Picture 1 (cartoon, one colour):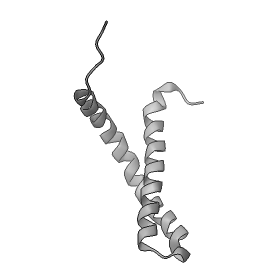
Picture 2: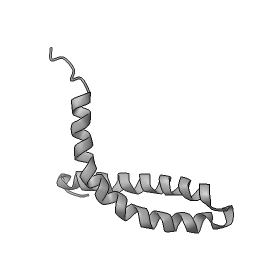
Picture 3: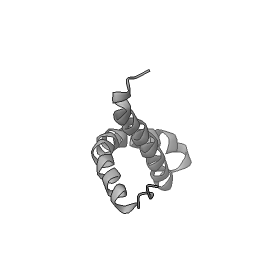
Picture 4: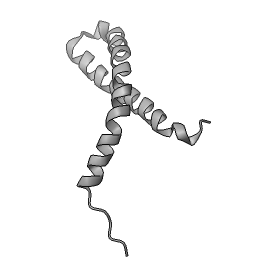
Length: 77
């Protein structure tokens, strides 16, 4: 188990991995034939994940702040 202080980094790693895998898979399927799909997908994913991971690390705190401004807080009561 990892210490709790690593939670934001682990979250970003997993989220960026899943999202870049899905997006690169859809994009690769759209432009490739079935016979080259898997190798093309893995190539695209291996290129996109190293870009997605630091992007999520930087963008996630900004998005959290934006969401906090856009969502009404529940009434204290």
